[in-house]
Image (cartoon, rainbow over all chains, first blue to last red):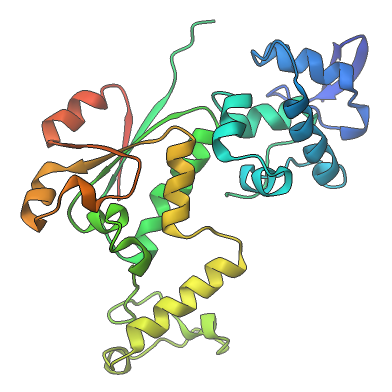
Length: 105
Length: 166
């Protein structure tokens, strides 16, 4: 297992750059990872999604599916895709320090 | 950094309930992973975007050798005999069974799935020849169907895409 330093903290990551230990995640790390994903600034709505994912995925280490996110946060599909353009499923998981979602919907 | 976006195009040619889902599930997964999605509906697949038909897709139990009664809680892998399958109401019964199962699993209906796909940026097109053959008009389609196009148009718009025929 590889490690890398993000926002001054050394964390474990897999080959695809996803963190493998959700407990190592911090908000500062999320800000850095978001920048890597092309999101310069995390707004309140971004945090709403990230917070939801953290809560939903903390025990399993896997991010919720997009539908679980829209249902859980009350955001629409359009809004979610606008917040995390070009692949929200992967981006949200990576920024939240979780693995890719396990479900299909 | 200017990586080219991967593109996938689905051709939906079937209108049975079970055959509606593959493109929806894979298309949704593709969009979630940042892949560009185009869906071309043709022949019986027109039912998926026909607003009068989309909520009434069915699955017939006749000549369906993989549909076993364990879905209804009958143990083992007993099939539904074709002779029973032809009885009135059997298609409706099998359809209800599948829809209930999907609902239980939290799978959206076909109409809702298509809405999600459109909201996420999928581009939907209807086949010109099927539209002419079935006497359909743009008003018959659900929101989100961009246009009625020819097979040639489809080829032009899917250059460089991976194409999946269903």
